[in-house]
Length: 182
Image (cartoon, rainbow, N blue to C red; front, side, top):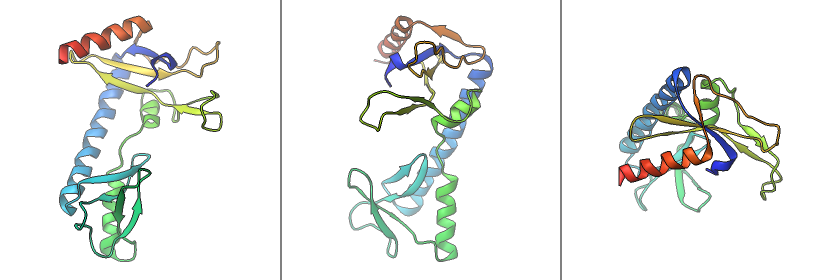
């Protein structure tokens, strides 16, 4: 995360509650993903925008009758067809294991569903979409980072019941947290 493109806050009140609820959803989804891997003997998952697209197996351990595709790095992953009830049931498990995304976090904190579009020169056809993010510190405080559009007049979304941080304060907190963890 490019910290200068975000306004950072110490989360409190409703925003902190929303972050905890979001983290709860992440924990449930991660457990469902882990259960999928165990059930099918997979070593990983191929995901796209929080959705499980397929499972990654050690070579030779792929399920018979499943289709193969490749991740952007070339890693093969496998998924069933959707022809039988059993295949459809597996796809339902894939759908249930959807990982929450930054746009969902934005909606939960009151920012609205979606990210902040910027018009930076990026090699991405002139735009980048940034989403809110959070960091939990070792002392249990939570930093919520809200994306800025880059326009000089943009103050960004101000999350309720949060304390704004100067960029120097943000870096000091992160550095102290890393030292505490070491």
